[in-house]
Length: 168
Image 1 (cartoon, rainbow, N blue to C red):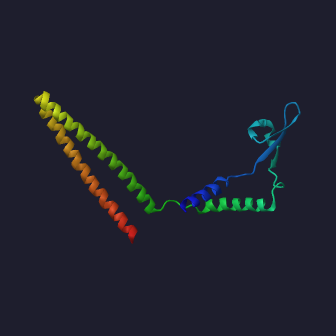
Image 2: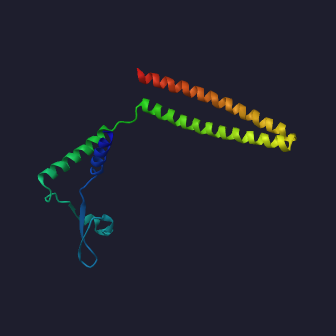
Image 3: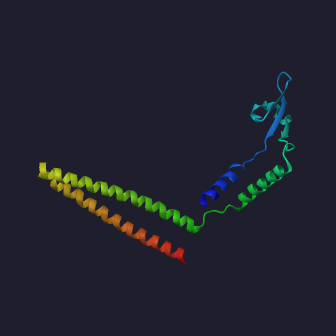
């Protein structure tokens, strides 16, 4: 069912563009009468005297004329009734953006943890003297991980409050 609505919307909005055309008549430097649909092709000195012609509707049936008028009115109405995002929609967008950033940070931390574990195995096998340097890296990682967990907790609280407000 929803795909039918999407198809109808695509058809309506796809064909709702301005279907009329404007043509221009002018004389070139040799005095030959020329017609164009691009005003840029008319010499600048002749643009003020150019004759303009709108597309003729005489080839359209009465039903096609009525449909053309209906689409014209609909375009005008759509422009007037478009509403800006509500505060709730803006909040949802901000929460989604924050969630994406937190997910990326979580992935980066998991990758870093894996690299630290590999580094530890190499240090223990080859060079125990670098273990203190490694421990500093681990402590720094743990501080950043704690901060990330706190950010996740705050985000979850905001998301929960947002969802509870939606249920009301």
